[in-house]
Length: 361
Length: 260
Image (tube, rainbow over all chains, first blue to last red):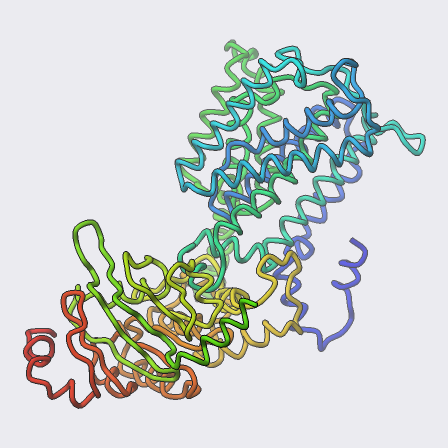
């Protein structure tokens, strides 16, 4: 981060073209609102208590990371994958299986620094293989295949006792302790989640403008033309699944550390669809969208219950609220909350311009 | 070992492009029937024919967009019949599309950059190109060559039709093309834009051959040295531009046959 800052404030007037390119590549660093959000996120432990820190913000960041992996596939690659949560859940299961847990008959007892890379590698492999199947299809069939993989994994974890411990799942999963810090303590864990989320966010942002990301957007826009330019579109699609799977796996590792247990409920079909809802509500055109969607989702899930009861309604109807919100977004803003916000800003900007110079046609 | 064999076969066969008995069926319909064409390196040829004559299908078979149902295609001596499109492109074949096939969500510069990247290494690179990247310079040069420097940061969706056609040509010129297929590059262009197009085509380096599909005889016959007439998916006649122009059968079929 310090490197980036020094680039930004380089007092070289001749560096105008690179500077413009840099601003285009990292719009966040020019936006005061983004700096404010970053500052608030960093000092959050001073503001929020343990409940907010973990139940709201860490959970938002984790769900945001998983939804970000879907945003990468859908936004840049045009591939809607419903198995991103399944990949995350697979990574979580692998952390529990290779690491230390209360189920000593299943867990291999590896230290976290060995179990975690293993879980990430296996989950990435899992996502890549799933992707290799899914890229043979397009549109609705991609959704169907990835949904089928998700559903199959859910039922498999329910019925397999040797590795996944059936419907009871794996409990009391050990979390990392090192340098004298319990990294699952509220504040430490919040910063771990924030750090991983920031890395994933900037990685997606960076890759989207790198040759690989540009090529992926080319495949999304016109895969036949990409082949006529020398690219192998399916290889790019599979590589995108691998990259997205790694991000989802990071989210999954954080999730199992957060809850300290994992069971089939964590990888249910409903949860898979929640990730899609989060990404779509937030907006799949920009990497910030999934995090906004996740915040809305977590806030609704946590507080809608009380609010509904206050209005004399059944608290369990919070999913109805989420569903109605989803419907409204799909109807009126196909690019999610981000799209609403951008349109609102553009309208404001154009109305000021009109009143100012009247140049706008 | 393979490359030695390839080089030997390139030396042996003098043709840039050699089609033998190429047939393409769509169900029961034969869009191409037993097409045999040989084009020398650096040769510039027009393919004429009415709508449905099989001109675009011919291009699709050569580039592999649709593989031929039977027959063989050789590119500089190498049998590319079974190759996927991207392998053919990497060997120096290029094409443009009749209906612009661009990337509307990306900028002009990104479109051209992708074309340059597609025929070089690092297609999967996770590292962004710096300002001094050789491909960025190549991109810049190409964008200038087709007079699009003024709009290089605009999204392609916002471009005028003529500009999109020019970008279409830029994508086909990326890297080191050896042979280019132009599918109606003048479609929908204004007279001025047509003149620019002719200028671009005639100023291509002499070693780059091409086949051009073009309805506008003024454009087509001015930029080629040989002509192939197609009719109903077959080669109907081959010859010099003036021979074809004055051929009574051709006039009957195409020029005077109520077309345009």
